[in-house]
Length: 118
Length: 113
Image 1 (cartoon, rainbow over the protein chains, first blue to last red):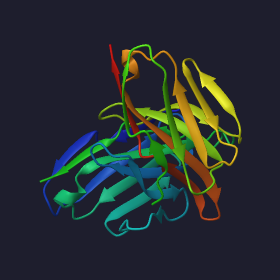
Image 2: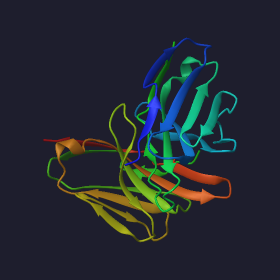
Image 3: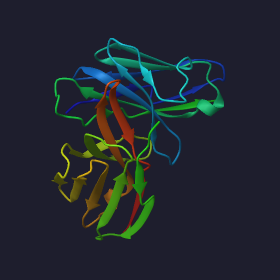
Image 4: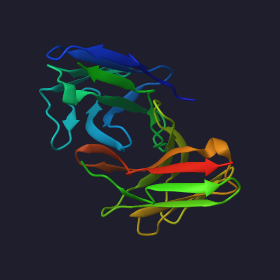
């Protein structure tokens, strides 16, 4: 089945620095990828949707200049948390769908990235 | 962003009991999905529903896509300890702005042996 690889699985960074998280579809091409953040014991909150070849669409309240999303190719999307602060500490998860399967909407998820800003 | 209302928020049941949880939305979705998430991991797809009224099973799991396309339920029969985890519903639709994919608020399931 479809596999989505997310890297790194965890990262600790200093406040004010930037962190890049990668999301790769390993055995399929993904025209659409989603980025979520999840706080402890809460649901996944959609941050943005990226479609290959166009700019990401951000959800209301998500700062596009702070969370830079680049859908660089059909197999790679990156999320960069710029000038990170402790309140950005969270679990970030990406998901992707195989564009070949137009009837299948079961997006595959990465294993997540635990970001801790100190 | 939009979030789907999921209930109950948590459940504590005895092994062998059946479980039922549901998800509602104020707006229509074209596809409903149910996921399970273990701590520190990404969600794993359990069941996908594509048509209003559809009833689909996957082993001990059964899910239905509501007729109004605004709700869905998931049943787990004869629960076992490994069913422990957090279950999320998710709705997908295609809008003029592109694909939209939102999650429910989650149901935490604890199975007591």
